Length: 196
Image 1 (cartoon, one colour):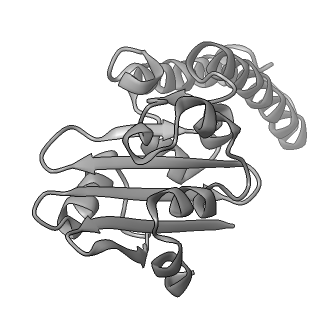
Image 2 (image 1 turned 180 degrees about the vertical axis):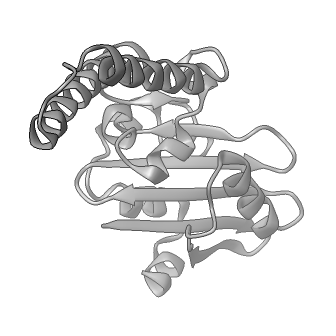
């Protein structure tokens, strides 16, 4: 289960709103959503949480590039919303590397079914063999993906909330009720409760 909230800083304190992510497909979409909620180009925080698995924070300050923190990159990588936050830059890989990996995997799948099949098997045997080949390929690619591209544990900017009183150490200790603790530090508990 997912929960997403948006906190926008104003002259009178923080404003909170729950956030629908149905139309958000990219980091750019999420950044636009945050900038639209910004008052006088002040700070906006977008918080995304998958219950008991991971949480992520996107911080936008005016027109500056967004800043990102994800509590568990490998868990987030298995989520469509987590993938939005896990950019190539954040993961330290070349832009487009994921597309190249997917293209190579597709070629491997094609080669496996074209070259590796005997000439006259039954449909059931073909289906079984193709399934095995795909499963083996996926197992390899998942393993490579997890170990090489997406580390387990936190990733991103640890100082993302330092100016609001949440140190790097504090951020690393946040777990299942992270949003409540963040809202407490911001002085935004009441406005957040109104939208939860």
